[in-house]
Amino acid sequence: MPEIKRCDFDNCHDFEPNTANQRYCTQCHCARKEENRRRRLETPVQVYDAEAWEMEERRKLGRAERARAKNKWILANKSFCTFDIETTNLDANIGEILCAVVRPRGGRGTKIFQDMRNDANIVGALRDELEKYDYVITFFGTRFDVPFLNTRLLLNGERPVRLMRQVDMYYTARWFLKLHSNRLAVVDESLFGKTRKTRVIGQIWNRAARGDEEAMKYIVDHCEKDVKILEDVFEELVEFRALSNTPVRLLGDIPVQDRTTTEDPA
Image (cartoon, rainbow, N blue to C red):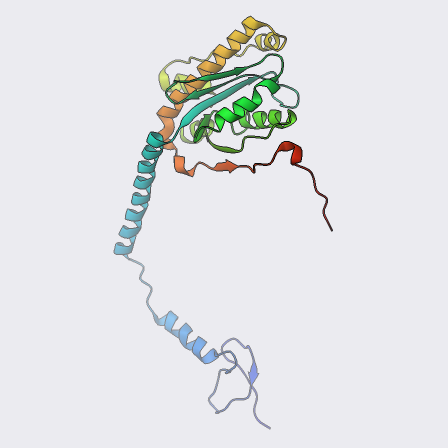
């Protein structure tokens, strides 16, 4: 009866050797695997490789310089606006938009949207205005202004903002500065020596919600100052941002009335 051996490489098979000295099975090419393993173990590892390290450092520096150059190109060739809203409540299913301001970078052609009676009269036009710009600058807008606007659009039977690249300067201040607070007033005062923000007085917002025109003038002025301050903060801190890395939010062009929930066919 022929002798049966177990493969020495990784005990993968029992096999019948062709010679008395055969140690590895032929089914898995284990002899070749063992030879490759031995070569790897015998090949010295080069721990010190100054030339490779220098190339890596140059590559990193090149990527950083390219990102800075691209930032300058984007600032010179793409359109920017600052955007802010004032509302009657922090929750969009309860409150409405009292006013919104869209300020092009540089301030020429600022658009003010306001309606004390019903924000259904302004949300569609506000959305369309924002979609004209390549980049929209906000302050905590990713968590408040844009979600609030999209909610009001949907509740009024309108489609949400379809395309937006949003530069949220709240997170720029939070990640790259070390202030006792990241509120816009504090950022403004810290960077420029004094704050230009006007106070948020709840009574004025309540009066505006009831149709008080003087209160509404105060709120519009407050909103206009906010977008101007925001633009100044952007210009001061833009070097901390890699603008080309700003996410693009693109929604399908589907009319709201056609968005129906389909049942799982299973």
